Image (tube, rainbow, N blue to C red; front, side, top):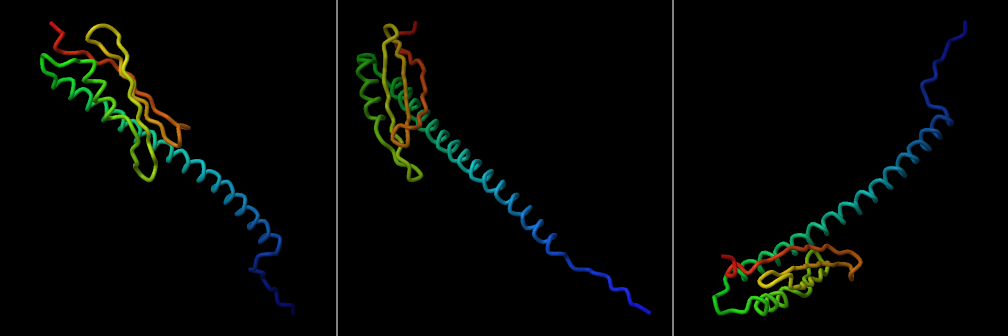
Length: 137
């Protein structure tokens, strides 16, 4: 009488196929991981740049609101814009702020705040209007 033996082991072909499938999945996942990490870094840096621009705008607005009746609106804002412009280091990245002012009409300025990083390769621009509230009747 012959004894029947049941094979419970994997064959070499099954092991090779499983390893190849695992390799394909690992390569696809690593590509996805790299792409998503780069996207998250870009989102983070854009958020930092946006907050720097918003903070500079808040300083400009607060300073404009503190003007006295005899102060020169244009000259005062230009001085604050110059103080706010320049480089800032955050998260080991250098951000450069450039604030420019343009006359729209008397007592109304167009403010352009551009924050760039990676030596200007990436940038965020915020544009708004700021009125001399002392001239509003």
